[in-house]
Amino acid sequence: MKVGTIFEDSAIALDKWLCASWLLSNCRNGISSYEMARAIGVTQKSAWFMSHRIREAMSDDNKGKIGGNSKDPVEIDETLINGKPQNRHVANRTQDGKKAIVMGMKTRNTRQVRAMVVPDTKRITLQEKILEHVGWGSHIYTDQYSSYDKLNATNLFVHKTVNHMVEHVKGNVHTNGIENFWALLKRTLKGTYVAVEPYHLDAYVTEQVFRFNNSHGKTDAQRFNKVISQVTGKRLTYAEVTGKTEERPF
Image 1 (cartoon, rainbow, N blue to C red):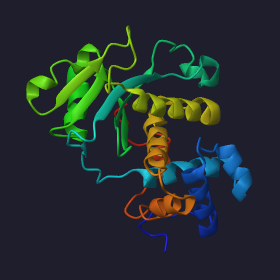
Image 2 (cartoon, rainbow, N blue to C red):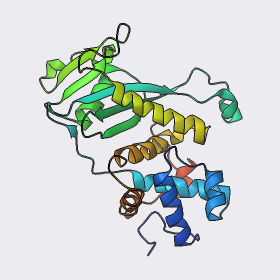
Image 3 (tube, helix red, strand yellow):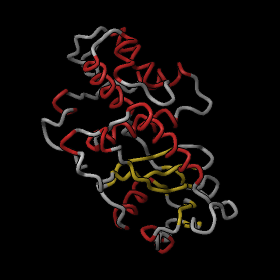
Image 4 (spheres, helix red, strand yellow):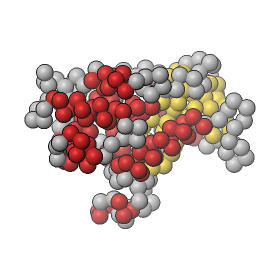
């Protein structure tokens, strides 16, 4: 039964895998590997690896595009993520100036979020992500950051901005929805996981996106079923999680 799923080559019983999947998909602010280890009766190291495999199942490869019409505006923003130096690995404590950047997009009415780690906030980087994830004809709301300039020039989107130096809301133009998601993400990273290496940040972002996108109008059982329905065709080895194979982009 485990072959061809995230559970493949695992000596841990399937009942413990299912319990772990339930916990990770339904704990609002995530669950630490120490707490999961106590709850299901495995070592902390095993719980940590299990959590990363389950996060792999939470990723949705067939996303399609969000928005695409004027009735479901898309809020777009970016944020900086950086743990406290004392919580990082000793080798990384001197890198105080390096912050990971996460870009996010949220539809106003359908409440769907896309978020991903990006290498920088240059115009070409952010606007390529917008073209990849946002449907043509969308009404896009951002702040006045220069990297979002000229989105209107493509004739693919209707772009409106709010000046956060003056106000946070201008009529129906604001980014409060995606900023609410940032608050949830940072509460999870700082409160539950405490020390997240940049190498793994995308996986933790994926986890929070999954819970957010499957929160409104869905039960714990439905979120659990969604995770289990996505476990096939995804393999994540310990070497890949620990970076002992090829390096990831960021």
